Length: 83
Image (tube, rainbow, N blue to C red; front, side, top):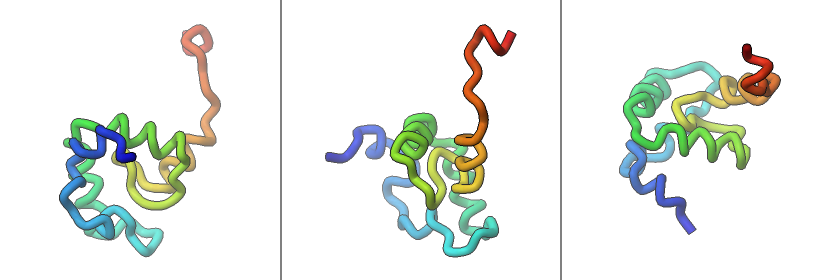
């Protein structure tokens, strides 16, 4: 079953290859994908999906796979710890 947020995604009507660059460098097409993600109304839901699944490849929620990897490595801080 498809998640409803995916139907609202800015990438919904685009070629999926655009979001899955074959090299580790950020190519011009990957830059364009990241730019499209920035304006997407369901970017948060997409990133939540990528972090929970987890998705280890491609651009999800406006982040590349290495960026999400770094995000996963960060310690979780509670509001009390942040003060």
